[in-house]
Figure 1 (spheres, rainbow, N blue to C red):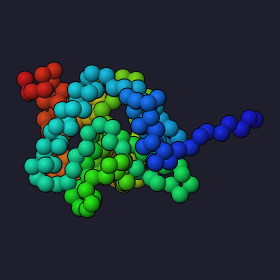
Figure 2 (figure 1 turned 90 degrees about the horizontal axis):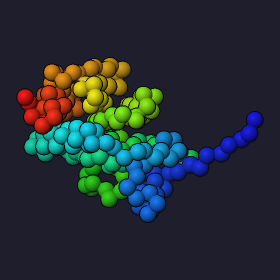
Figure 3 (figure 1 turned 180 degrees about the vertical axis):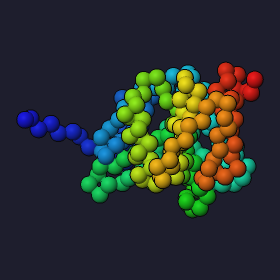
Figure 4 (figure 1 turned 135 degrees about the horizontal axis):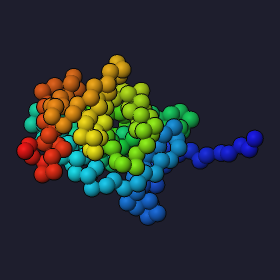
Length: 196
């Protein structure tokens, strides 16, 4: 059997790579030190992610709950002592007030978000999506919302092992992470972004 070695990267390496010309415009993440290069998102994915970012961000700011982050903001879920870091970049992230006493860093946020929202693209593989959810929950994210634009549904995962599915006619809430947040999914999934 042939031994195939894989180059491993740290979160600092990922940050440096993301600013190199050969990676311009590419979405990069790390899982246990292995570089993951993702395809650019499609239009429907971007539209849905943008709507959720605006709705969640406005709620967080209005209630001074912390900070919401947009797509491609890196979170270091695990800084492994052997350099096998895991860095994920949710479409929408949320960090509770008080977690960043020095303010937002210029580079990746050094811990898992309290909330991660991932909008699924047609080319996303089910196994990779599930691994992302497991990574978030394993390293401290309190709620992960996976949005399926074509199916017009959202599955919400929590560390306790629950998974609740919401359809286009339902209202998504913030659970214990963002209590009081209520998003009518018809607004998110409708073509014009407004409730018909």
